[in-house]
Length: 456
Ligand SMILES: Nc1nc2c(ncn2[C@@H]2O[C@H](COP(=O)(O)OP(=O)(O)OP(=O)(O)O)[C@@H](O)[C@H]2O)c(=O)[nH]1
Ligand SMILES: [Mg+2]
Image (cartoon, rainbow, N blue to C red; front, side, top):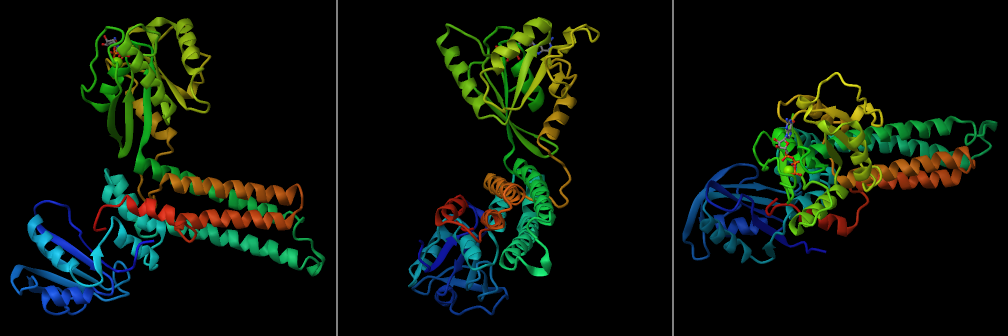
């Protein structure tokens, strides 16, 4: 556990800038103001003041602000000093502040952690602070901002309220089974109510998947035999000549990574060495790495050279995909379509229609279709209205909520076991609580706030 002394840190990025801000939070913040500024500024009014060291020498002039508790970011007394943004000036000021009794340097994310612990925000909002700072697309920034303003929390708490209603209902039926001569457990009403909860959890989960795609992007591995045109497709998608393309089979030997955006959706595209048996030592390592990437992929684009013909391609597909992890989504790209006539008797009926795309990395034919496919498979919508940012841990908690709800329904329908159903609902509720942080371990908090930048 961190101690609750007053904390201070430079809140602006290291380096030179017009303004540099030092933030102080805790019961000794006013004492720090007294020391540096000569007095505590009037609450929430900007004051232009000299900043002095302990010998009374002026280090800088700037603006100081005082936010008395509880109306501050952290919920504690907060003083903010806006000095000139030079690393030396800020360092000198911070050193003066840290010499004050009961004051120590803040750890990364500690201001926001205190805001969370003082109920200024819940955990999804605290996470959204970091996600907003780290946002690398407009979409991500807008979604993080929605989460920060409580969009995700509201959805979760609505779901939780409904869940509590059903739980209360079941518990009341257990306690007063004879009421009105109606058996509430078996009359079917409860199972329906749980069904509603299951459906609702599922739609929250879908929205959360979208939110996590916006945040993290998805990892797409381009795989296939040598010379199929994998690197050409990477170059097409990224719009750059990132990868070397030649007609020599085995051109790519290392892993190449590119981040691209499709309508604001981030994608991590990975080009790999062509999968084949080879004597070449370097290429062997490349092939091994390619397999490693495949096991960690969210989706594989399996590139086949259409000119090889259906029979050979089906065989290649079988040989390669039989080593894929189970449930790994695969999209088949029939590349070099410019070399194959559209009207052929090749139907590729062994592959399902939804995930087979005729493409030409040379002419760009099929590229839009591929992009559309990528957006759709991730359930991505470019509308930011009501979207929120989500993390993997939120998805996992929603999964657990869903499983407990299904178990609860089974207890009612199959075993008529009201008590066990109520127990499952309690677990489901706990899983929802983990998302907003009513129910978390110190470990989890350490992990979440430890990944913040300093001064936030
Ligand atoms: N006509 C035509 N040629 C293509 C197309 N895509 C790739 N090629 C050619 O096919 C050859 C191999 O392309 P690459 O992109 O290097 O193939 P790769 O799958 O990355 O190959 P390795 O790195 O060796 O595994 C090059 O000569 C490309 O110009 C296409 O859509 N149409
Ligand atoms: Mg290549």
